[in-house]
Structure formats: C-alpha cells, structure tokens
Length: 117
Image (cartoon, rainbow, N blue to C red; front, top):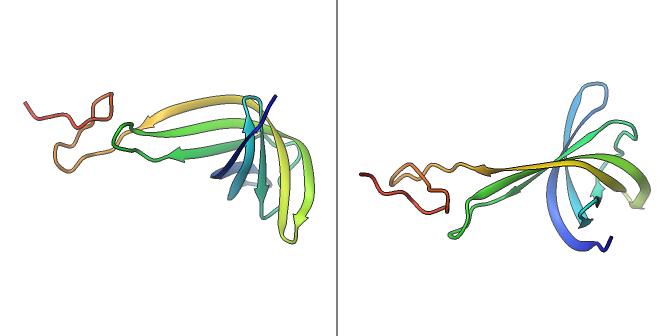
C-alpha cells in the first residue's frame, strides 16, 4: 500500500524483561503498516503498542489513537544512535480525550463548550 510521510512523535510501549516505554518518531505510515525511528533496538517478538496523541483544536476534541503492532523488519543503524523499524499493524482503536473547560467544565460531542442550564 502507498505510504504517507508523517514525521509524528509516538509513545512506544513494549515488554523487555519488564514493561518499557520510549518515544519514537513515525517516518511514514499506511493503513496496514508504519515505519518508525527509535533511539534503541526494539524486541523482535514482543507486541508493541503505539500511542499517538492528537491535541484538541477549536473544531475538534483531542484524540488518543492506539495501535498494536509487531516488528516485521528492522534497519539498524539508520545513522549513529538511530534504529529503523517496519511495523505491521495488528489492531487499532481511538478515543476522544475529555478536556475540562474552566468556564463550564464540559465539552459537547462536537467539541464545543456546553453552556450551564
């Protein structure tokens, strides 16, 4: 599938003799895969959870997008201290981020501030 250039930071969660979490940079993505750059090697056989946070804007609420992936290929090193990984997406989910508004304390489904009755 065709890939789109992204350059988006992402939190990567995985198991490597205990729970681990690092920040990486997604270089490109398609509906079934992601290529990312990290500062360390990732375990080849451990499922990875990627968490993207898209902040709220005036027109939409924030979204937390999570996908479970597995490493399908690795390129190391891309350059000194940077490792590249091709990931296959196994499962995705997203949820709206509820933001408390100091004026009314609530946002509606469309992301607009709800007025007090």
